Image (cartoon, rainbow, N blue to C red; front, side, top):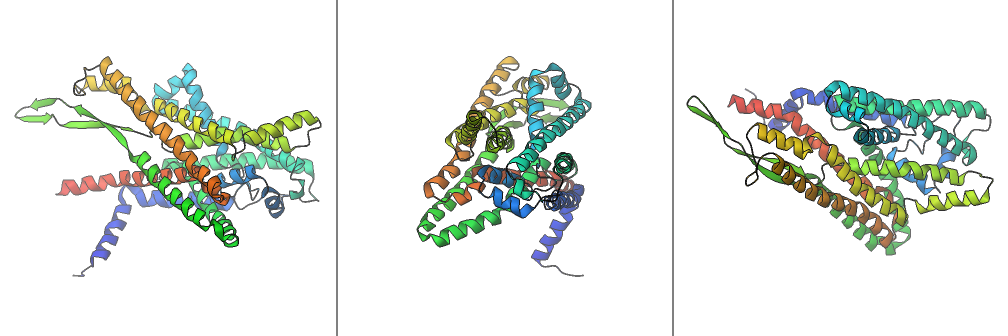
Length: 447
């Protein structure tokens, strides 16, 4: 009989676990979608000189900021240059509308899977509309400001119409890949695509930072301080993502024949950051749309000088490196964290209290029914308040550190990117653990 070393046994156990619940296939499918997304990000639009556009975009901070979240797709003027942005914006708007429009709220909460499918269909349609509008704005920017990136022998009318259609279709393709990844892969598809886009830009930011520090050695202490702040930020992000307030639940005992069931205490976890990375992603999507439009309109050749100066001033006011942008960003993160906590189905105090009363369970020292709902609402409000402000502060610290140290080349992978990367990585690990639970139960039953 062949003998295996401990390392070989561990490797075989790991490979065996990957086959449980189709985990290996889910991971491979996710990787396949990521490869297709990265391949599409390298295919430029017809009639575009990507190198000329890269030179024009190098001096534009807004385009560089947008390019990071598209994984270089915007910088390459690829067929998926709009990225996952229109889909995220559409999802935000539909979730907000579901709060104020009774029909949409009914679809979301009362009609089960059929209602959610119909709501998803509305989101897809609205995504196409938003993508078409953004494609139109981007093509106007190319024709007005980045004309040098268009090949000279290209018919401009054909280029404009074709580019709008292709960019809209590319956004639909990205949305389709994101939904497939969520359904058949591991993790949230939209978050995974943004994660991969951020990762793909890290070598670029590392290179330009190394060149900057090598030319100016006095920046080396600042770089070490900045990296230490980035590391500390990552630690706090993980703490924020994993921390939870556990509310103890006392379950009643039931006697069936000579056996007694139940009676054990469980708990309900209220996470400090119930929305994960979604408040960050939503805040960026909300901010980038007006700043993008303002930036592009401000650079266009508007005949009225007063109007042109107004757009330029407003664009600079909401620049990603400005104080106003960071203040609005902080407030959006706080507000969206509360909003996301209010729409998560398993975090509704009234429903939790109703279910606890139905099964005879209770919180120690609190009466069932309305008092339980009020107590849970207070707990949820306190934990969400701590999480929202903590997340907002964490989101600002690395950006401020970049300005203090003078190393602004790493601002692209500041707190926003760090939070998204850490959050998506933790979500991925948690979903892998969830898929491995059947293996643990199977091992338990065999004992």
